[in-house]
Image 1: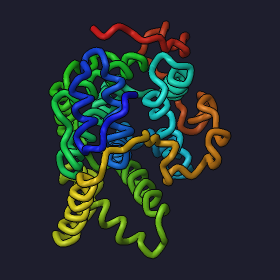
Image 2: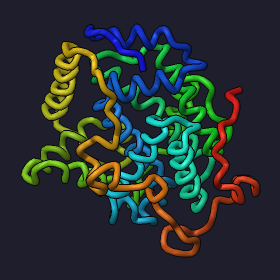
Image 3: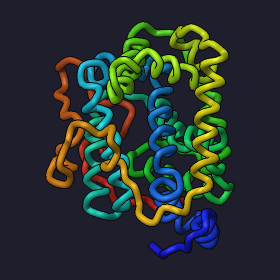
Image 4: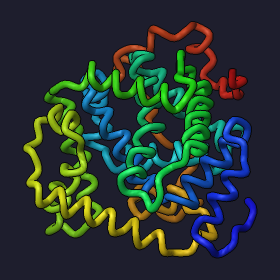
Amino acid sequence: MTEVGGKRYDRLKEIQRLDPERDFLTIYRLVATYEFPWDHTRALELALYRTYAVPSIGRLLAETAEMTDRSQKRYDDTSLLLDAVVEHGFDSEQGRTAIRRVNRMHRSYDISDDDMRYVLCTFVVTPARWLDSFGWRPLTDHERRATANYYRTLGKHMGIKDIPRTYEEFEHFLDSYEAAHFAWDERSRQVSDATLALMASWYPRFLAPLLRAGTVSLLDEPLRRAFRYPRPHPAVRAVVHGLLRLRARVVRLLPPRRRPHHARQNPEIKSYPGYPSGYRIEDLGTFPTPGLRGCPVPHQDRSAADRTAPDRTAPDPVD
């Protein structure tokens, strides 16, 4: 990683010198770990959260009980697995191990390709929209292209079919899928409530009602309606949005970050104290057994080759 100067936009100049088609991993790493680490964490939390409003996804999470009975560990494992690829790259031992773990978990469940594609789209679009509203600067088109290429490559490693090619295609698929599939489901609401409770648990208990109200005020109307949460008070929404925008203005005045900040350094990670001795990537996640609760059948839509070769994590060419 090249060293940047002391001016706030120096790293953006470095990013603009890179090729988003060839250097997408480097660009995405700079964006996620140097430019916007706090915002990136919050946006990915929201990205995963909004998937619960698709009943087929929310119901599956409820059936596995991962987000209701073991929400902290599920949060930690997801964050660490995703970030291992960002930190170490697709071709590294750590990155390949993380992708292998994700693939083995997903192949134990009956998850449609459309749902897998939609979740991938949330990782591309939600952070960009968060930064448009609350970042110290928005993502540039250059960075959006690199982000799309990063997740297109990740999706190929995961065996997802018909992945969108551009940021605009990711955005169109996400909006269309949510319009068609967001709906009320009691079990999805249970997963949503458990996630809100988890986020509140990171702070003093007396703040829990305020944190829940503040979080709900960040939900867009279609997402809020899908969970049947009451409309937030306009004053609460104004305060929460105002504080986030005030934070952005303060961060804009700070010098550029000189060291990367990774998910394993986040205070919200509670299950594995003492990194790097606190966990091994190969032990993260779940190890579902077909036939037991939450693991009804392996995925039936993928090819036999995919199901019998779960360790296939070599990168596919970007076409």
